[in-house]
View 1 (cartoon, rainbow, N blue to C red):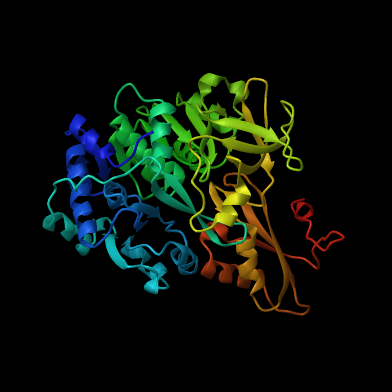
View 2 (spheres, one colour):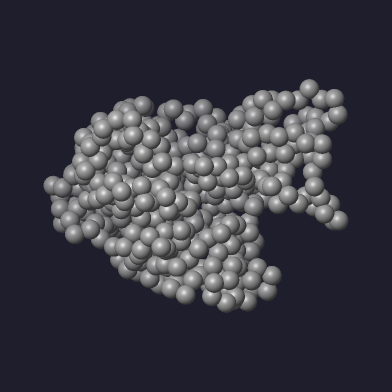
Amino acid sequence: MGTLHHYLRDRAQQSPDVEALLAANARFTYQEWDDRTNQLAAFLLEEGVQKGDFVAILCKNDHPYPTILLAALKIGAVAIPLNWRLTAFELEGILQIARPKLLFYDEEFAEALTLAGELVGKLVPAGRGLEMADEYAAIFTRYPSTAPAEADITEEDIAVILFTSGTTGTPKGCMISHGCYDTYLHGSRPHAEHPTRFLAVHPLFHMSSTSLIFYNIHGGNTMILLADGEPVSILQTIESEKIEAMFAFPSVYAYLLEELNKKQWDVSSLKYVSTGGTKASAALIQRYLDLGIPMTQGYGSTEAAFVSGWHPIMGMESADSVGQPFKNVQVKIVSPDTGEEVPTGQVGEVIVKSPYLFKGYLNNPDATAKVLIDGWYQMGDAGRLDENGFLYISGRYKEMILVGGDNVYPIEVEDVIDHIDDVLEVAVVGISHETLGEIPRAFVVKKEGSPLGEADIVRICREKLAEYKVPEVVFVSSLPVNGLGKVMKHLLKG
């Protein structure tokens, strides 16, 4: 295994004049990008950031994000990407745990940081619309582009902490090491025969997108950043920048097909597209194949990172699977009751062991011990392995709801609704959705005669929760419970 802090430096030495990073108002070669990360690293050092310190990023898909990420890693700091869809209330919960030394943010998210207070050492505005914020822009006129002193970093050191909500509603920071990413890129990730023009439209704060930043540097690719994920904007960028590959949720590709049916677009440059986060249907995969565009998909999680992958060359007869485990990844299907491995073809809980597993949850050993047992990560998914080693996911043992690739834990939503006056009981479940996979639905029991309406609950949820967590609301007279008084949520799912 190796480390990530040399990736950009090494690539700049190999292909200094290749376009590396393109955004709305900026285009940088690998040499120029490396120089900018050196300048930003000098700023971080002057601010007192040292190895192991936390540097948070609350920015959209524009050039500051990957520049901040790489600059932090160069000096041994730990990058903490933040979900810009979260509310001030949700971000406060994360910052309570992380307490970063610096937090770079796009000015449009300033309001979401109103509760940050003393939880952050220093706030640094980075983006202002499609331009750089003044304070951030000044860094590149004030600091030298010479490389920082060599940091003593090992593959076991933490590179990135990605936050995911816990089943208790408490945010959990997944600690990902340098070696996790590096081992995957050197041992499992296939490389293109020539540099690829890659469209980064998927939000960069996700595990998949973070890994793709390193993937593109490792392969010497050109990464085009697009903050606007609207279908027309994506298709315009594919045309104008001759995009060859991209990653997005299945729902994005479904909307792209709708737009392609309305108007003629030139997508002939696309060599392949990738997806993940939630299962792509065989029908969607086939529709792209009909356009001459292979669609690949992967399976994993923030904690387990990279588990399996599927490619059309594996045969459309296995398109309903999530492919075969990557090199160095062991997958077992076990009984959720006994922990014993079940026979091939039988459904059980998916558990994973690999060099890509997270190092645990930040400051939360109890939560870590519940999911990481004897080196095996408990995915919480129900699945099966067939005789050819293809993994099929049939559902989840956990209550987590997967909304277009974003995790929603019912208790997060239930906690908000429970605090509403006139609410007696609430239970939140995931229900099927054609494009997003699932969406949350809240079954609410209110006080008799209460004027509380669906719109009232939705409004309050929008004040406290990210938009993708806001549920549909159904009022019921009671919730189904078992003899112990526990709500039987499977009955609510219908």
